[in-house]
Image (cartoon, rainbow, N blue to C red; front, top):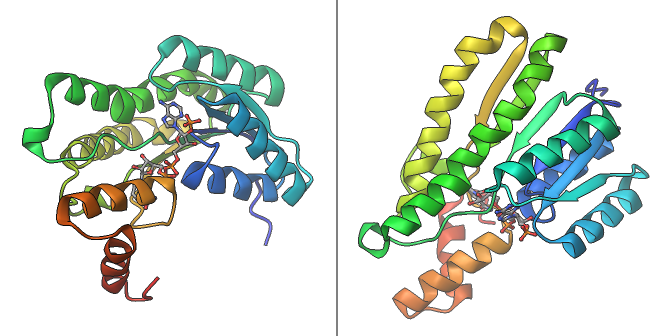
Length: 225
Ligand SMILES: NC(=O)c1ccc[n+]([C@@H]2O[C@H](COP(=O)([O-])OP(=O)(O)OC[C@H]3O[C@@H](n4cnc5c(N)ncnc54)[C@H](OP(=O)(O)O)[C@@H]3O)[C@@H](O)[C@H]2O)c1
């Protein structure tokens, strides 16, 4: 099936690993011109090489900490000059610090706001003018299943992901007339480094091994994996 993505200019934030990388790979498989971004140049180079090996598509990449307004601005400038005005923005980032309400300081709340909400706002600001000019655009925010039901022990995620949904729904009403569609994805549990990290933390708190924690969660998934 042709999804009509060939040669589209796509920016995937936080894409050296995990869900961001898998998304970038899927776009490259469809022939899109992909720009990868994360904080580690070596991980980005490895990801771009992997995409090339699997698809024959050359992916561009830039080091960018999504909590930096200046680095985001530079990234989108580079994407437009290398791949053309952005057609698709995948807003993604690392997960916030784990823990409950009493585990978080003001600084933790501020950091999670910058990482998990403000970065999305800033990235959308960067692409909106070009998308409005073209009269089309797609913005997809990767959030979490916590937008439907809070996840125990992830108060920061539970708070800011729902903020993403509120923002995205508001913007989708405002900009659909410009041909810009804005959607938010709420992934459940998908085996990535983030999930390994959370399993380790839960294991330490409950006196279980990471494998036991993993098995417990898998039991809750109908497919069992
Ligand atoms: N996996 C799941 O089951 C699941 C479920 C629900 C929600 N989520 C959420 O989905 C998002 C992606 O999860 P994941 O499992 O793919 O995580 P992951 O495997 O830990 O990958 C995170 C990616 O984000 C990049 N990153 C982290 N902080 C960044 C920053 N400040 N600026 C730029 N890039 C940054 C990392 O690269 P560098 O270290 O090189 O920067 C890496 O490429 C997270 O917000 C996570 O909480 C995941």
